[in-house]
Amino acid sequence: MKLKNDLYSQNFIALVAIVVCFVCVFLTELPLVGGFFAVLILVVGSIYASNTVRIIGASTITKQGNSIDYLLTACGCISSLAGTSLSVMFNLKYLFPLFSILVAAFSGYVLVLIMRYILEVDDKIMTKGFISISVSSMICSLGMATFICSSYATDTIYTVVMKSGYTILQIILILFIKQLSYNATKGPNEDQKRTITLAVAYAFLSLIALAIISIPQNPYWIIDLSICIIGCYICIKKFIKFSKHQAASVRYHGFYQGKSQDKGDLKLDD
Image 1 (cartoon, one colour):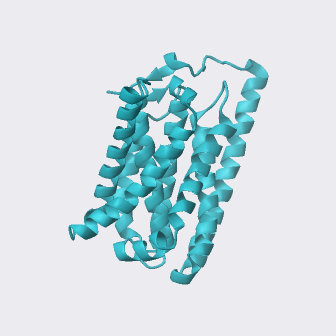
Image 2: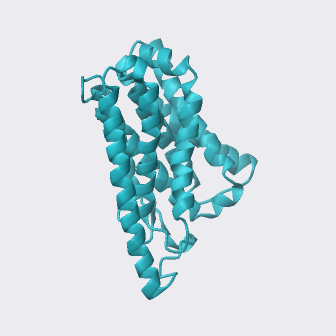
């Protein structure tokens, strides 16, 4: 899936997000730098999620309302819990990211079947879009969980995140990252760079709150908090820069510069 004039296709972003998630999740226990890898997981997950929302926003499926996005986000966060539980059940703790992604993809596909055959709603990007939202939400949830725990250990995640009810907070923050970044930048000249940059800025902003929450179990919380503050500052500056460039372009060329985002601008990658 790709919108006209996008720099990066959805397939490329999805591949990078999944690979980074698999590699970085096992580096989150490293002293001093472990928090950086947890941050990286959330950043790529936020990019994946916000780009998916952009593409779905250009489709007729948005007429069904934002409740679909809320439901898929909840499915993604719950999938991270289900993957953790399955890894404990089968004594394969190192495969919990794989289990989580599989459960998230399955959950997204079940909702596709419900929309298509029960509610009789169909769209050419519905399957890829729904699965992408569920999987990207799972990646974001996993990044937040490992950031809070400073560990990928399933028992630690269960004790610190699941039992404490932080999953609800994760759902709220992930929706905050996706929806606000898209709503703040949508329009006739919506640009992939601006939307993604703002989504990453919101991701860092969310991590500032999570860094404070993680103080009891994270001896390096001050380092993680500093990374989040610096990252948020850099991304906001970039977003302002991109916004000024777009404002100047609109000033001289007007709106609708051959970038209208109707269904005809959607390209589905095979």
